[in-house]
Length: 174
Image (cartoon, rainbow, N blue to C red; front, side):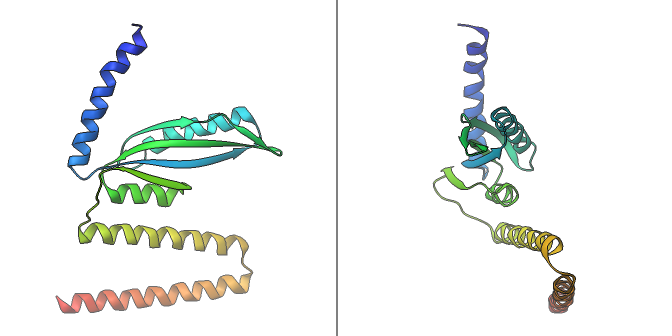
């Protein structure tokens, strides 16, 4: 048995132990599927490896193990399927990860059932709303005419006023 096999035999039981403990405490084990497109074969694999490494640094990610397929040439681009098994601290962390990195598919492996506290459901929905709003704002800033941007900014101002009004109503009830 070589050194790599020895390390692997020690690490696998630890990963299983970490996974069981995380799942017991509300964690979620999932496989996320991505597709990376680049102009060169080598760059596709480099970006895939860097991407998996970046996922490891995301909030709530306990571990991420990636499998990068051989790049496939499609015209003048290379496409690389990337499959990443992620253990997150919670469903909320997994949802945030998906909102930020946009996998084309997600498969929750464990647990068999997900229960959310109302506060967690609020967090998930707020993150989805914020991420969508950020994307809309980016698109409008990059593609809209000055008139369309002005109209969009007026809508945002009205939303902010409405938000303040709603928050004020909530404080008045306390």
